[in-house]
Every structure is written in C-alpha cells, then in structure tokens.
Length: 381
Length: 135
Image (cartoon, rainbow over the protein chains, first blue to last red):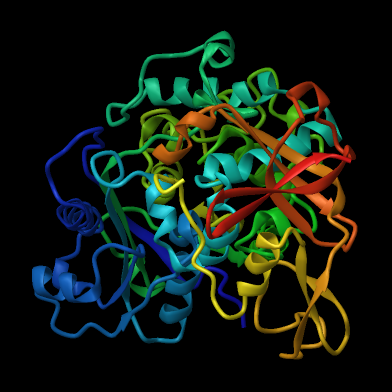
C-alpha cells in the first residue's frame, strides 16, 4: 500500500512576517491556522487531526481556541526544519488509515524577538551529545556545525563561495517580488562576497533570517478535497530520511550527504515521475550550501556538481529549475519550511506572486536537526 | 580562572572517563568490550554488535584534518575574546572523528589530510579541553 495521492493540500495560511514583535508565538500559530482553515473553506471545528511544529502550541491550545469537539489525532514529527514536510507523510498516513479527514499542520515562532538559535540549540535534548562534547569547544550554532560540511564540499569538488552566492542573490530577487517578505532589496554576488564572515566559508548572506510570524496548511482526505474552496493540490510522493550519525555531524561517514538522499528515491518512486517533470522546487534554505547539497541529494545533479548546476541564474524564475520562488528562509522569513509548503501550493494553484508559468508539478523539501530530511512531490489536482 | 564564562560539559557516568582522561593528559576513547569497535562520542550501546559492555582505551591522539571552519561571530558571549578561532574536524587514527580548536596552526596551514596531534588545554581547575597541534 502506498501513500500516493492519499490526501491533498486544501488550505494554506500565513501571518504577516516580521522582524520585531511583542506578540506571542502562540498567537501567530493560531492566526496562521485560522487563515489556512479559511482558505480551505472549513470551520476551525472541522479540524480532526493536528501535527503542530514542535516546541510550540500543543493540541490543548487548538481544542481550547477552536472549539474542536472530537479531535482524533495529535502528534509531532520532531525533525527540526524537516518537521513540516515530514508531517505531510504523517498526515497522509492517518488520513489513509481513516482516522482523520482534515489535518492541520502549523507553526508560530518569535525567532527574531525571542531566544536566538545559538541559545535554542543548547536546550534541545537531541543535541545533548554535541552539547557536552562540541559546544564547550566553541562549536555552538548551526552555522558553525554546518560550515565544515560546506568546506569539505569545496575541498573535494572545487565548489566556490561565489557559486553559493547565486542562491542568495536569486532568492533575494524572488523575495523582492513578494508583498509578505522581510528582506526585499535586491543584492548582487559582490554584496554577498562583501558580507561579513560568520563561520568560514559561510558569510552573513549565506545564512537564513530569524523571524516572527506563523504559517499553516490543511491536508484533507481526497473525497473531501474535491469539493472544497480551492483546487486541491495532490501529494504524489512523500518520504523522510535520517542521516547516519544524525546528531553529531562530525561523526557522519560522509559530511556531504544528508538524510534527504535516503528519502528522495522513495518519494520519486512513489510519485512515479522523474526530475525533468518538476516545474518548481521549494528547497529548505537555512544556509545557501544546504540548498546546493539537497539539489545533489535529490538527484537533480551528481554529488559534487551542485556548484556548476546552480550557476548563471539556474534557480531563477526563468532558469532550469525555479527554486524558492517566495524568497525562502534566506529572504522571506524563517518559518522552518512551513512557508515553503505554502508557496508550493500557491505555485501549483497558479496564485503565487512570483508565478512560474504553467507550474503543474513541484517539489518541497525540509531539512533540520543537523541532517534530517523530508521531501514531498505534489501536483495540481 | 574562576571567571571562566564559556559553556562547560555536564558529564554522565557514560562519559566521565573521557573528561577525567583529558585532565590527566590522556585521550581516552570508548570501545566495545566485546567486539572492540571504537566509538565516539561515548554512549551506552555498540552500534555494531549491540553489546552494552564498554571499555576505555588510551588513544594515539594522532589524526588528519577532515574539514574545518573559522568562526568570526560569537554565538555565546564567552567566546568573544577568542575570535576568530579555527575549529578542525579530525579523522583520528582509531577511526573516529574529533572536533577541537587548534593551537599553533594558522589558516594558511589548513588542508584536508594535514597531520595533527591532540594537545591539552587546562581552562580551569576541573576542566581540560582537547586542542589540535601540528603533528
């Protein structure tokens, strides 16, 4: 039994994305959820399954605020930035099992106004090992823990910082076309090269934002999805993958391969399509390097060829593979990839602000917790 | 040294011998007491034979650089005075990797395969951290 087309994305919602707020993460998460539920043409009390992003709102918050009378499923998929896409697989499974009709995926955060990432990581149980053995040495934040992956790729394959800059420049241009993006002034490769070094080889403009806001999506059973407010976006294939040595990157046999490499063949196999069928891709972009590495692990090019694959505007709206058409975590807002699912849905509906012409099939990835990956392939229903 | 303001480890019974070894200027690595596989970081179960019997070996302290980063931003205020600092990831001769700052190695020296050896940096009375030096 396969999860192929076991459910559809039927609603998407966001709050205004901000850098500075006095609101709570909970209020952002509930506002985004209400927007997604409205977009689907449902009442909040219609939701019968919940997969909130970890470290935020819990089922009790939704039952209390939405008046849900018969919640039938609640879970989290704790994979950091891979959680949102991994929760699509979870939602499809519980819908196919007949447990739920409408599952709400949601996230709200005060990443800019609340605690910053270097401090947040120290408090996560999945990182207790690096907390003991690496953080006392000064290896604390993701930028520092991921930089040796990028450096290794550069040393093995000749990948350059200017190639990574292409991702930052293209993503910023896409953000400049959005009304709801926090960084909208276009940048050049030279701007990237002049931005300050954070943890070599990663510069400031290789790093994603810290943001305040919320994003949410509704996933519905196919028999309901066909008669809802918007055209359904069918999930053709979905999978998650966990790398070897998932917490301690230092101990990973191959620093340049992520968990996504295990998930991608499963998702493409389930969807029954090939890479050339993908019209648009929303790729988790906590750092520019992670985008390039995922394009390799997805199979769009061979390992080591990511640098040349992304050159010359290849990821732009008119390039060979339009990527992060909303501006991503690098320039729209860091919503842990929930905003990537929102954008892919809008692209396939044909209602995106930076629309890829005739986008009918697309792909979205999540990446997080030092190497976990997830991927979903969707089509216009 | 009482004003040490960086992050410090909180050892468990599974990991304490590593830290005690560093205090004595020995690099102790955990190994499976049944199949002999060396593992890092210390943990309760061997992922090769699933034995819960562990022992500690005195490691050579020698290895070769696998990758590195040079940090220019203090993600914790205690590290502000160290900036910029080099962190190397090293393939140890025992088959595991270690991460540590360097002493006496500069950016121009860095390359994949650079031979290094462990040194010991007593940062406060009850804490010695590993560092890597040119071998």
